[in-house]
Length: 96
Length: 199
Image (cartoon, rainbow over all chains, first blue to last red; front, side):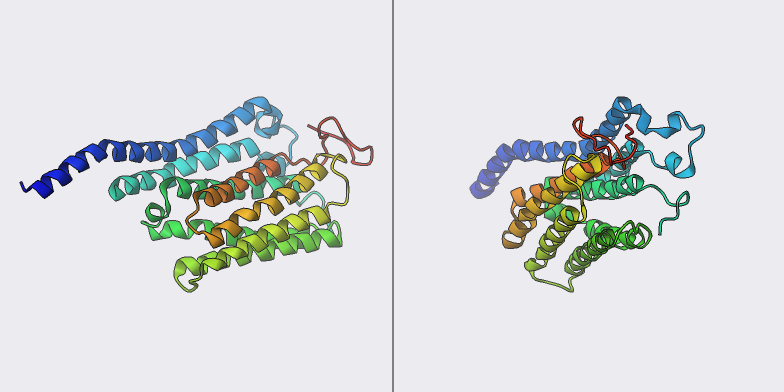
């Protein structure tokens, strides 16, 4: 092993944990975005249950049964976690 | 003309657009977190937010055509449709490689300024008339102030602060739109001319 290569390796191993920690932090943030959004929707549904007409559907029209804003927020969070986040995490790891 | 009974209420349309804008916000936040290089590793991802922005503009046209409470509502909805399509189209052009200048991001500045002005101008009542009036004023000023973020991005494309601010703007707009009700009180205020209040 040449001295240059050895020095490069030492520097790399010193930097590696820091870089890996940054990658894993970014990956964790990406993985948390969807669940955090979904949790926001669940919290909203608990705080304002009357916004979910599905809980008291009798006598409600079509549009009122379709309009469930807290569920929309949950759905957005779930879809982001399932469709967008996995590929991003994979790309973060590959890019590092 | 309003096709009563068939059309969804205006507040529902606000919630549907809030959902679309929330998706835009999540995509932009994720891009800020991972960085533009990682975000661009899969080409389809680059098309997500411009495509959705353009789609929201297209979907705004039926809103303009069907919710004809007043002339000024039609003008406001029509202007939102145009600027959403302009921004989405310009960003799609940049992503596709047809457009090259970083200054195409200025279309977002135009979109935010026009949208904000339309919100304020088409709201005929004062801030505390009802919740909808308050939210329209709040949305208008939020969008106008937030225009500084894409302006900063056009001048300094790699600014994380500008990108974060731009992304968070969509969250604020989504929350404000989700709060909308056709007739509800705001901080205990509700005009006697605003109809029957509900939660």
